[in-house]
Length: 173
Image (cartoon, rainbow, N blue to C red):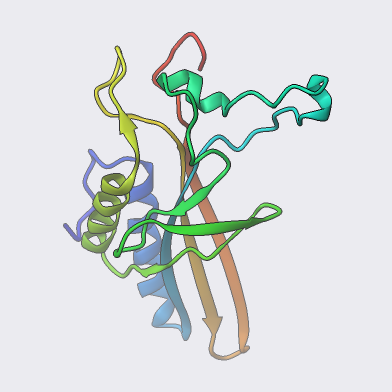
């Protein structure tokens, strides 16, 4: 729907408001492009090295204990959830994600299809509280590229929403 729905959550409302503002500003020579991206993070946390554990190997990924696996090969990795062809690996450089794809968004319908693809690509495992509990953290990033035609001033703005793994565990959340 192109009309704001009162049942929408934060992300659809933010995208809709951005698209409405982009259309208004375009009439005044300020042109913007809204890009969507999503990255799935597995267990990005510090763990002891072999030296710190007095010669013993470091324990398996802490994430693995939570889901009952002995180890998980995805520990410490990031994947592009917006990639149509499958999960493309991403690289972290400081707090910046490199290698993720972007989807141009100019309507709520594009956002809806993007969110469906992102959540379809996420790794989920049933828990006692939630049949589709995520096993990873997911960051959905909105990037707004803006060019003011009269001043030739360019601006890039980014807004991220993070869905944390384990949020369905009240005792640990």
